[in-house]
Length: 186
Length: 134
Image 1 (cartoon, one colour):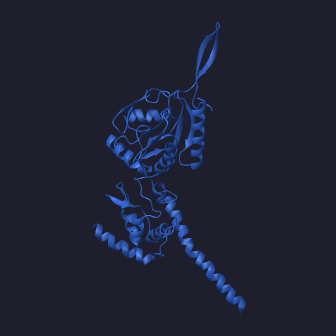
Image 2: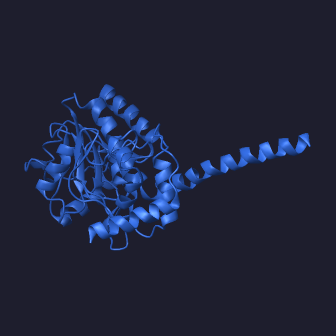
């Protein structure tokens, strides 16, 4: 499976010769708060394979469908200690920790494997760029936010290994297939 | 003469098909306005968005479900024994005809069965729930 993202080119010396090498895109460290009011940092995903999406709890468009599809993946892998989902809310005003806790309860998910995250607006939106998932605040969009329903699959070294349209059930099957591959071989 | 009888039969069959076409219109409107939350199979989403397929509340509401489509819903509801409090915003800019089509679709999709709802029933119901809300 390929590593997704822009590569950084660096010059280095090998046996006294200057060569150009490329470094994979790695998700930088982060600090967010989950539905239990716990701090979630890159340490939490250390040596784990995890999924990432961006959503908001009052989303009138694609989010419920994406969540329904993600629940399928969650149910298949939630028994694993090394599997996580990070769902970032892009509505930092309305989606407080309390609201995220309500959502987690109604959606019947556990913070053992699935974190609903909030943080500063700047941190959340900057993080969406790192995962190459569009998230824009927009007055013209239904619900006030424009965002893509893509899910990123991230490996144990915080490198993106796949992107999947969360609204398409068959793409979710691809995601499940790729997750199994990653668990088996990496 | 025999042929005329045959054609009348054929025509009546075709017009029967037209009545299910109303449900097709309803299906298109459902896809546009309702499916995001209630899902294409009417199953809803956990305890966040209630199901419409084989849902006791929808069945009991009958034509009155028109009020929820037009005016939205607030507070707690109970559907098939599960409590929902997400609420629903009004679906904007729907005509009574469109609401009727959606109603006939959701009342007859996914194993749901209900007698055809007429436009005048919907208009009358909407008038009543309007005064109830105000």
